[in-house]
Length: 233
Image (cartoon, rainbow, N blue to C red; front, side, top):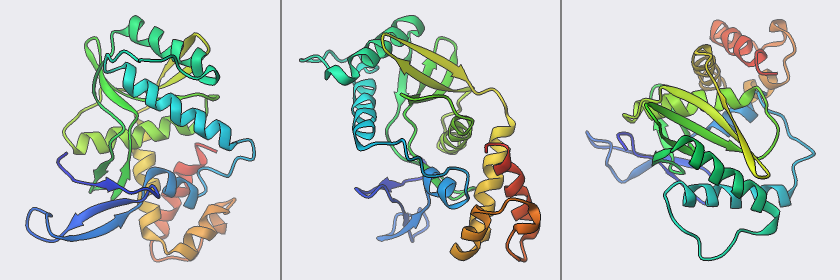
């Protein structure tokens, strides 16, 4: 990658610091997509998320990364995700998807944000970044692929299309995210995050109207972030 970044076991992102090529021995923590969304009130805790669902989602991503690389498993998947694994196979057959990469962190210095795209590669003549989902569609899924697209572009992969891959028992649904404004809205949200202190972000996260925003010398940046966030709520 053009801009090195690593992720640790606690899902924190780190970039190297120091030296003309940023290859010094120091390291600096940078926020990830999920961290920013939580801090800015874009996403809220979901009481319906369970540990079992999280584990199934993780296993499904492992199978997705395995199958799109053309590998043949030695054993069948667990029964709890077997139907969705069939959906992955159907997606590969239907689209002839060719993977370039995925499941590796990428960093964008312009927004100072890191993220980990699920998949990026080619569907026939088009380059895509895809995020695999096992649940229902939400508006923030388009914001997530916007972040991924920006970060990949900073690392010399230009995704011409973005989308979410909703996996179902025995099938799938590929939904394209074709609103270019998702990218500018994400940039506004990231800028707002960096313009505030943790205390100011806490106030911003629960703001209902512009008048509720915390006092700041960067009020215009906060207004733009608030408008961008409002689109996804």
